[in-house]
Image (cartoon, rainbow, N blue to C red; front, side):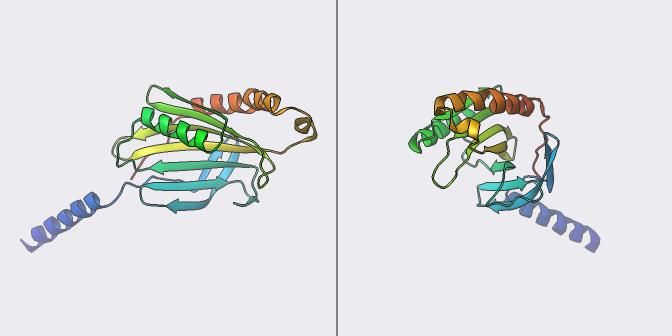
Length: 188
């Protein structure tokens, strides 16, 4: 009888703790993208949002050339993909980001953003992402980011031409890759 009571108490405790805990993304220590290995460099959990940032060996959070990022929105408000797209469009427009595309294909959000060089960041930056909702978990976005230095060739091009160049040689290639990669993210 004591054994049964102990087991029941343990089960109830597990059930209650399971109900009270937030879903956790199973984030690996390493991710391979385009035959490059990225290791978890930083992670932040801000309650409803968590961020996992991966870099290649020898790079730092302050100084990197390419990165992989997992963004995890526990999505307690049950934001739809359509609403997520509208929100991002507003944010990009309000922050002056001009070169982006967000599109929904079935239940997946694909996007790219091209950031122009600034006073603080001398490089062009391209982010290509794929995001999905995971039942009972939230929204997960896998993002690949690449910084492109202002080379001699790029410096002599007008911004519009650089944008076309980056779309053709970076965005198209990475979007094709991201669409082909099997979705592997899940929650515990």
